[in-house]
Image (cartoon, one colour):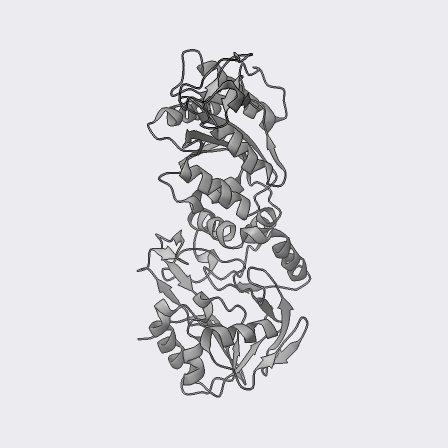
Length: 449
């Protein structure tokens, strides 16, 4: 049985929702499901705007045949060849051999790769090309790397609709709604729209800004994305967010604390810091990176202006879940943030130095000097160090000088064994010293950097 909704008098949403698969793209949890949007235009010529993921193929095909009501399918606009939008394209070409595919040259190559077929009669379009379907006139706009190289968007100058491919999309099934103004978008959809953008498109901020620049020259009255609700009013809600996300500007002046804690001691320090920040009126969010999927943590790192990474040393390195998060932040080009560190290590704290190295490879990540080192657990008196860190963060957020100065930093003084990482805490190292862990001589030690 078909399930469709009208977008305009002659444009029909014929997509479908998947609530059975808990993971999107084999990576991202989607507890609220996922929508796969496809649209059919019933003009003098009929136009299908993209297909769908194979998980919802049956519903999509029923919707399409009902909406066509016996008419031939004249055109298939392929905006994006990723399989969540084009997995069913091959089957559709067999069902509707009369349809002419409209795409660019890169997409044609991907059709050959994914579907082992060479579409006959395809219409290749480039930046600025147009196509008339009767009442409607379409202009094609290249959007390379938003977020694949073949992506194009199309603009209907008649009804002033932008078909935006993955742009302005969101995680989440539509649950009967179609338009963003049918829900409280800020309350119910913003977080999933941010998580979708940051994890799927976040790496390509400059390319998104380029597309936003092109879109700003168009008179847009509606935006039809391939995931999530359709926009027909209050465009600033989503566009203003996209400008911030694409330019890596934080939405919230506050602190997110991603922490990893094996036995709870690092978590205790993170909790105390969060309490002190809250007392100072600073917005704060915490995530246990061993429990919370990294896609949520990455999203909040895009959201907040300051980040405190709290992590134990593990096998002389960074504890695995935290290292995964840090690498993921680097891969998604997170930048323009201020960060601080809490490190832990029972005999050779090294996570602070190693986290610093990863952060140092990222663009415009300023590491605040006030950090905290734990030796197994918080020692008596170390509450003052966490207070100093909270004061420093609060002062930086408010543009003030900190009320307290840090008493220690994340860099322990002394000498580190180059073999096992043991740290000998002293200003001098005896010539006859032997490492108590690996029994190496003093010559295998170097000053802590």
